[in-house]
Length: 250
Image 1: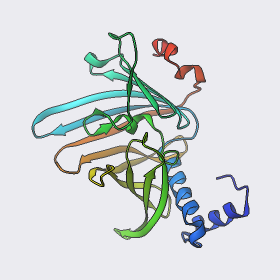
Image 2: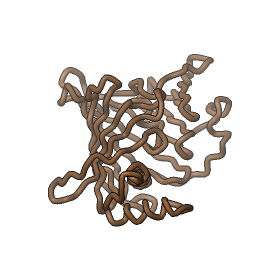
Image 3: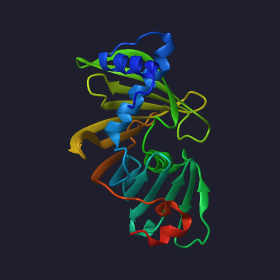
Image 4: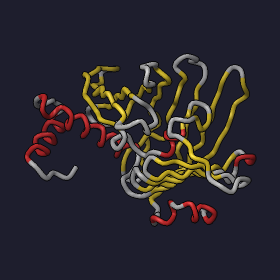
């Protein structure tokens, strides 16, 4: 975090000490926690990562999807479908909170929302958006102790209607800012699904979660497991994130 004011300096001291330094600084304190957890999940620099999604349900056979994500900041991303073969060539393009899908058999892109389902329990925004801090305003609700570890419990409220979820409850480990779990809620307050961040490994200089387990809140036996691999920094000029350039992507 770049410190440019006395207020930010106080917030940084509070963050490092794990304490809240007064009501006036609560929001900035919570937002700093959120930003640090974002930096654990994904690098700030432009990057590429492969994501395998395995969805299981008692009523259906196991569903497998493989995607490649190109991301630049939190405002530009491309999600390319690699498998199954029947969907290969489909590409999601996100610019800001505008999202389109391009399909080989259709000449014009189709506008989508972040909250629409991509596959299984995974929404478009779960892959297209690289972090939470740009989409949500954070409030620190409390501290939970789980298996002897202390966790910040944040309430995240969407900054507008274009975000993937209206509200998120987010558990972040106090000692290292590792994301632990999240609960995702609809506008009506209904719990939609939960997620767990697992399999932390050293990637691009930080220990990062390489597995995300998303479970349906009503049907506990239905879940999607996202496995991240081959994460690497990649120079991604702005022209990559344009409709005309997508046909050139490999």
